[in-house]
Amino acid sequence: MENDLLNEQYQGFAEGNREMLDTLMKALTAGSGVDTASFTSGRAMTPESLDTTLVNVLWDQNEAVLFKALKKQPVKSPVHQYARRTGVGDGDGAWVAEGGNSFEKDQSLERVNVTMKFLQTLRKATLQATITTMLEDAITSEKMAGTLWLIKQVESILFDGDSANVTEEPDGLRALIWAKRATITKGNIIDVHGKDASSKEFEDAVNEGARVIRGKFGMPTDLYTSLIVMEDVQKLIRDRMRFPADKSGVILPTMVFDAYPTPFGKLSLRPDLFLLERGIPVTGSLTEKPSQVTLATVLTPADAANSNFKAADAGEYYYAVSAVSKFGESVVSSEIQCSGLAAGDKVTIEITAGATAGTAYKIFRNKLGAGSSALKYHVGTIPAGTSGTAHSVDWNDWMPGCSDAFMLGMAPMYDAIEWEQFLPMMKFDLYPTNAAVYPFLLLLFGALAVKKPEQQVIIRNIAPSKLGWF
Image (tube, rainbow, N blue to C red):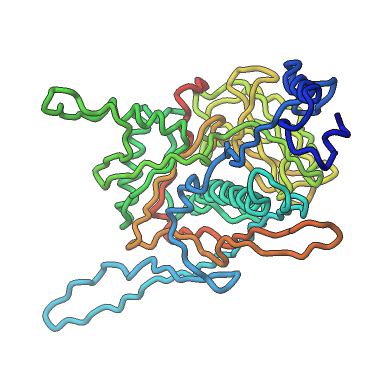
């Protein structure tokens, strides 16, 4: 059969012998196994159907909801500066008698610096891949994969970034608003303490947040939440709002709502795929990641002035810690018990770094009274320092399994928040060195600038209604 097939006079089955045709048909139809992974243990010869379209099971570019909505402000320096006017003088002596003297008033100005951060990924396509009939063009496919990777990184960091923990990343909304909580964002961080988004507490928090923004000369426009929280927001709207019937007598709202009315402006509802509940430890994939840490000395001193532990939170917990750096997250530590916690206490844990130190520590805590080895969720991150030993303090500011909603004022006329764009997303070609590959970088340089943090609100510690922890 092999010689017949290789014979240059052979033109096709019509001119071949019947025996050869029968042999080929048997090879194509015999057996039922399809071992496409390794082609071992024998199998039928089968014609292969190869779809030339790559099916993407991940996110697409439209999922960067906040990043797409942000105004992009081109900047020309790795350190961008701008000035904030925070006052125009007090009102004392504003009114005078006829011919009276006026009192001099001064405006208050503040200089702000925003340091650019650099997001990039190395991608390669082999020469063989570029000349082979594959799913799609190899370089284009790798470029798209890298673009999706950039989108996930930048959208996540807009909410969760904190340069105090990982120097190379920009500060996100939570870090920028939280940092000013003692001064200009006092009242902008509203705690629902484990209530879900269908509760009255959340409803009150939304109205209060809108009032705070409006009272500080802003306009609330958008409410960003996790997908799970948005489910509960829809329940809240259906439960609280009243709608007229249409002409046929049918009640209208079996729909999904994309806006939330408040006395101070209508909020566009923005469920964001990358705004997540505080989750479990996830060990990094790079060998350069930090080493496992060890824990000791759990203390529960009273700190009523700062503690967010209430009477319902008193009891026993178990904690664990992982180290993090720009290379990822370490294996989580062994757990440590905290018993006898009372309302108004705080929890202090001594953390000792491993051989490869991280730049920060992520703290995890289980459900009240759940016991040893129970599921633990993230409750906070602290800088590691340089001494090798650090002490984390848990005031219950960030509760496990919960997420935060961000109420933003994004109207262009208020110029309150923007992305300082040092370099837009671009492809930077590299030269191959000792391999037949086409290497390139995908780049995005910039940072989030919250020019008016007093016009942004965090509603924190929103529990999914299905969590059942609080």
